[in-house]
Image 1 (cartoon, rainbow, N blue to C red):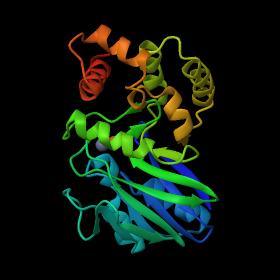
Image 2: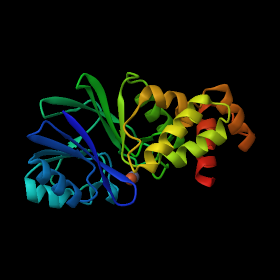
Image 3: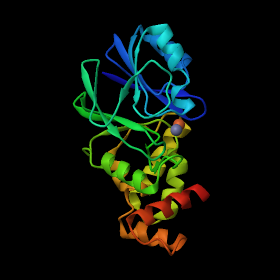
Image 4: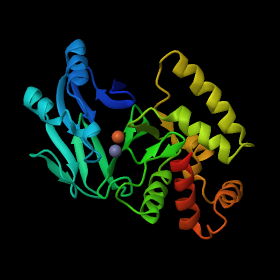
Length: 255
Ligand code: ZN
Ligand code: FE
């Protein structure tokens, strides 16, 4: 099984997973990069998995369905290009001989879902759209801080070896903020150097792993003393778990 991030727009990735014959894609904001990749590799597109309704994740769905007859899967509670199979927490999507479990992760949008497969080439795999980014998380456009914190907690509870496939290349800017929050976190320093050298070669920093994200991602570290202290320096009124998370997100939005 091959996993490939197809770059789209300025910083999106459309994830392509294939077995040399059949393929699925996640969040095709544009059709052409996918059609090119399918043609180059002689692949048939079986399934299109969508995490949320934003145009940079759905813009290519209609044209791809038309060109390939692929089946479309997406969130139950969002406005989506029809027809599609609507999914909610606990549902599963069989594709490429694999089974993807649906996890509700509201926050970035109200009905955002993630797709988790326990074993792809013997490693767990997560497609998390705009919920979890490497060293960051999505903006809260439609959900509350409490919802997003619960969603990130659900993802963080997956096995540490899980490969994290995010929909945007935001790693370097997220790491700059992470370093401002935790200047003494050595894992952030090391990952920043590695991510910089990858980006200089125009290579993706993704997929990440949950093990790494737990070490460097401030939004998965809001119960760490170092993060709590830094957030209180930004907003002294942040008290409980949700308050700390909300203030951290606000700090990032302003930085
Ligand atoms: Zn989005
Ligand atoms: Fe997006």
